[in-house]
Length: 526
Ligand SMILES: Nc1ncnc2c1ncn2[C@@H]1O[C@H](COP(=O)(O)OP(=O)(O)OP(=O)(O)O)[C@@H](O)[C@H]1O
Image 1 (cartoon, rainbow, N blue to C red):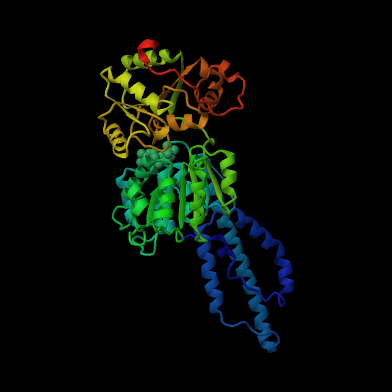
Image 2: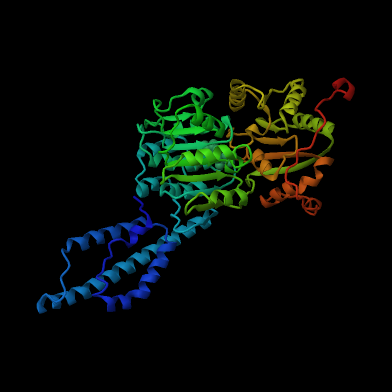
């Protein structure tokens, strides 16, 4: 099993006074060794060598007291030389091994576009079975991964699993649909003992109930064949659940519900070992940040491992998080804050609100390739567009925050099952939701920021599949085009040069008042 790097230096105990001359001779080497180990990737084999050496030295018996007899000191001198040689050999071997591991890690990272910062970052895994050889991962988990059809780890999984498993805190930024969920669930399941009676051991926070429910489902599938208690925080649980009696190893919640539970129910988070903030940049936005703060405080276990995951992690969020994290590792896959390269992105000028309705109808008439997700700016507009499309013999549905939980769940389930072809949505499903096989995302209303754009279009082009994203824009949206165009260009899409020449805008959010969506003349629409 992988051990912290400090183990590498344990066991070397010299009588410094006695061997001061030798120490002087060895000094430069020690420094060199420290430098190598600082960069080293926790090579497990190296750790093992050192451990056995430590044991051997202990078995050699008590140290000989200087000046005890001439015979003994002669023997001692010979032993010292032998010892030195052995230490030199060991060190050389160790250094060679560490260098090999560093090289291997560098090759893997280059191959998979993994960028890291932080000291002593564990080597990425080459394959899922390596979890078992390197970390003693139980066979049930490998079996579950295989059953889900996951043959190879994705780049974020290759790096984030070893990082979290070895107890390092972590910021992770990887494209939408690249398997971040499994990257944090795997190490949690590997590390925790199932069915513990002494409280919640892992907390996963997500910005929406839909995402919390999805993550819980994913976690249960991965934990199959093990008696983990995995719970999603429902409204009832948060208000009147007695967590002293409810067995729970892993708790998934929105920030609001967990905060209510901390106030109203007996929710003790002091034994939590893993705290994951999924869609972390959203969780650090105004409206969530106070709740997050109280959860972070309540997770008071000194050895807690906290981590942030998102497809978009602005510097401001990293700075804020860095102030609470210890010795965190930063893992970026590909280019930071960029859209998935699997999505073909297109900007379409529609002139006005009326133009949008014509354009979407025309697009559906030409080729309707469901499932299609259509994003609008507000719940009012979602209802309006739904009314319009309902006339058109298209199996459409709508999801927004005005629906009750059951209606929201039904909308998601029907879309997942293919009973709904077109789902009209607000940003409530823009983040994290994994609708399998969405072919096209239409931004009916221009997204309010570059990160909103990345997450919205990221509902297609997931898990290696291709997708298409169409963004309508009007005269009013033109000044904000450049933000989106930059994202498009960074992910390899063609963008007209005039857009890239537009002036940079200071204002990041764009949420204009828009005319209502209707084919009726203005007066009739009133
Ligand atoms: N190793 C793997 N091999 C194949 N598919 C995988 C693998 N890991 C995860 N997936 C699948 O990839 C899809 C996307 O995964 P996930 O939802 O975790 O993405 P994400 O990176 O969290 O995306 P988002 O940023 O949108 O939240 C899921 O359907 C998941 O089952």
